[in-house]
Length: 394
Ligand SMILES: Cc1ncc(COP(=O)(O)O)c(C=O)c1O
Image 1 (cartoon, rainbow, N blue to C red):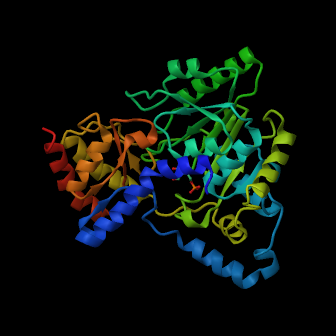
Image 2 (cartoon, rainbow, N blue to C red):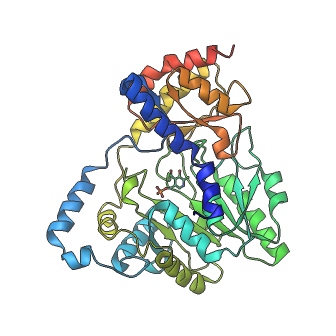
Image 3 (cartoon, rainbow, N blue to C red):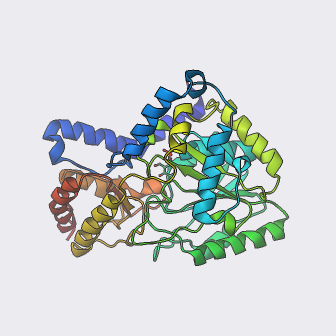
């Protein structure tokens, strides 16, 4: 008999995965090329050649017992040192290996932070629309999600609501920049305002409020947009990073967490994070891929493809009458449905062979998410379907 909590999780399932599975069934029925599956954030471009070369090189030249062995639960010291150096060079920070923990992707990074800082019933603030898995990660540690209403104008931060939602029970705030599902990049001004509010609230309540910046899309920005490095604005910040999207390695489960020395209770927290990596069953981030990314720190996949896809889709959809905040990064966009019922809208879309995800999955009903990390041909072929879908509501 499974636990009550798991029964609930299974019942609620993942709408994104469900749409993806449905897409596969439809592809079998109608042919893969006739289904426009925009459900999953699985990168469509291959990893750069350096990744393959690094794998072969490490396997051939490094001792097997090291490459495949256990190491410190926080990761190989030399890899953490190289990651710190690379972050310092890019963002003018001052980290060392003692500020980096190698993690099982961004999801692993989020889970070890929550495991380390959360007591049951602590509140964690989320900004709608947000990555739906956050609810599940919070439930792992019996944290209470407190959701800030969307800022529908820009899909940035609804600051008035944010201020009202912080209480003496707020332990953490999760921000995702650039954002899944909207593709919005929070500006430096937004980050400064967010930091000021958090500083004030810490003083008011005499508590530590940790900002957790979830950044698997950091390099995935368009047209020279800039993603501020949050540890420079607010000292109680963790940064979670992942190679899933920018190096197209989502199945390899590799990322890292930055823990600044200035963070409140640094020593205790850093120790706790290593224990969390171990006792959550990760033990450590995948050993081979720690070494691989250390050789590929300055590389990304060819991310230009996503901007091209965004331009084609955004121009076409706005022409067909869809309302949408233009994405500045990621490979997602989040247009408004032509009906308040986003689930019904996504069901209707299937009649036009479009697989899209309802906004309610991201705590923002009335909208839908398109993952445009697909071949350009699929984007081009799907345009007529988006047009017909829009027309069907007129
Ligand atoms: C906002 C956000 N956070 C975290 C993750 C998890 O990333 P990873 O696969 O690196 O664990 C994803 C994956 O899609 C994501 O979109």
